[in-house]
Image 1 (cartoon, one colour):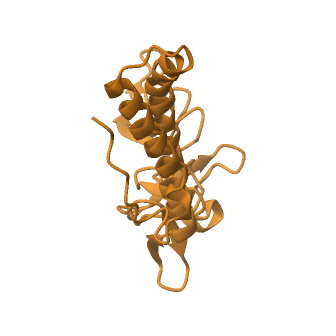
Image 2 (cartoon, one colour):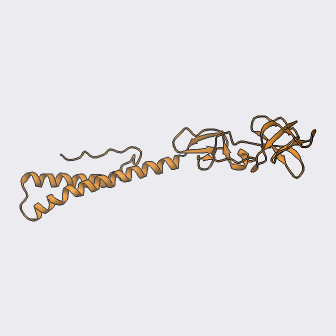
Image 3 (cartoon, one colour):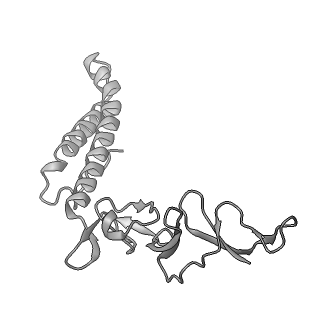
Amino acid sequence: MDIYNYSASTGEFISHDVADESPLEPGVYLIPALATTIKPPETTENEAAVFDKENQSWNVVLDYRGTSLWDKLSASKVTVLLGQTPDELNATPVVPTIDYPTWDDGSSAWVTDAAAQLSAVTSAANAEIENLLTTATTKIAPLQDAVDLGIATTEETASLTAWKTYRVAVNRVPTQSGYPTTIDWPPVPE
């Protein structure tokens, strides 16, 4: 006798098997737990047959677990449960392949989030400014000490002026007309 096994957690069809005949009762078949003699319906892509124990019947349920989906708000991969649909999850099977993706319902495609891109570029530029200012301040400190103590050489005095000029130029980078997307970085003193 044919039997159809289903999952204890989801009720979905797992496999087809053959029941053994009872050795004590000929003509009686041993149906294991989580199995039925009711044949599941045929399913297509993104569908699963799920057994309803209470009604002793199979239902066809949407199944997108094998489909990679991405959240339209965060562009992150979504974990899908049996019965959930892309619409319910606000997800799409379209892979976000661009930097700073945001979903555009009008074109049903990922487009570049200009605000997020600008924010990232600005953050990177600001981090580089801070890094360059730290380097300049580190170079300036001992040179300034030598000048303050009146023991600076001509080279040290010239180097101090160059590094201070550089530090001022780095501080002015955010005032450039193309900032933060186009930056003319000042040359580092020798």
